[in-house]
Image (cartoon, rainbow, N blue to C red; front, side, top):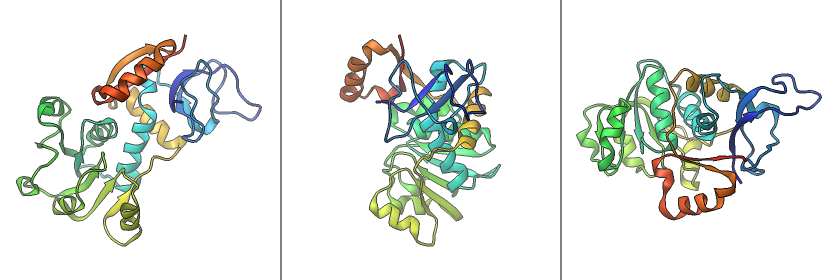
Length: 248
């Protein structure tokens, strides 16, 4: 189990050139293989990058999947430009929050939706305006260059109503209907976070510069991973941030 990780390199293959024994790194293992919930993780060289010196291992382990998905949504699918306007639906989730921070750091203005009781938290991230999940698009006085549905729950009709001319609608939900829409000419795109050394380096740098900080809800030792994961499944701890499991 587990995909994201951070740690210190203990051994390398004969053809590895980008990292050395003793380097502090962050990265991910493939979705098919998983295995990051362990004392020792085996990863491909292309799937790890050096951890910024000022970033804790716990913070580093929280960013790979959500960071890459948000980055690829904004820059690869959305062609984000400085000064662009971005709307993030579910702006306080893992991907949503990462997208807000990355877009803001790139000079975009960011609006978004969140639960009614979380508006102050969204405001602290610089989101403006802030609306509820079931908002009426008529209440928004502007159109957006990028509409990112970070939870896969924004109605397409609503997204179209708040989209600027030549804008992009991007969703994280690869449903058959969404995949079909993305194959047709038009603004609709689906993002599925893909391994990319360059993108991983970009989000690592953003985190090192203080521009990307996913919240951490809980840090537990590996010996307590099963109870923590059970609680996560039953009580939704992830809504408050990432669960970080520490070896030892």
